[in-house]
Image 1 (cartoon, rainbow, N blue to C red):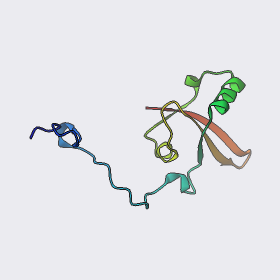
Image 2 (image 1 turned 90 degrees about the vertical axis):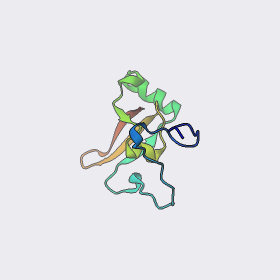
Image 3 (image 1 turned 30 degrees about the horizontal axis):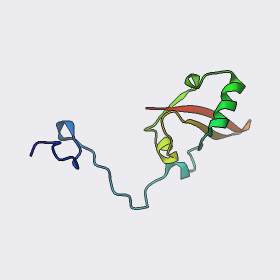
Image 4 (image 1 turned 180 degrees about the horizontal axis):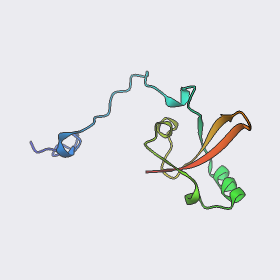
Length: 102
């Protein structure tokens, strides 16, 4: 059989294919780790308010890749805007915003 001829089998260039592992319910969630700041996906209204407050376009926000473990755990999609909330000794809480890219 020719590689990739069976639609249920993934096409793996060079034969080095990473298969999706089964979910056991015990996977590590980086968002639950004490050293990882909170990540929230903003609603469309929150994004509009954020962009108008800083008078910027969405593309001017700093970027975060969809493959980032925190992005994957938050179930973000390309184009979403994420608020990262970090604890700060001087400010109490510091907010950072990132646009999700491929």
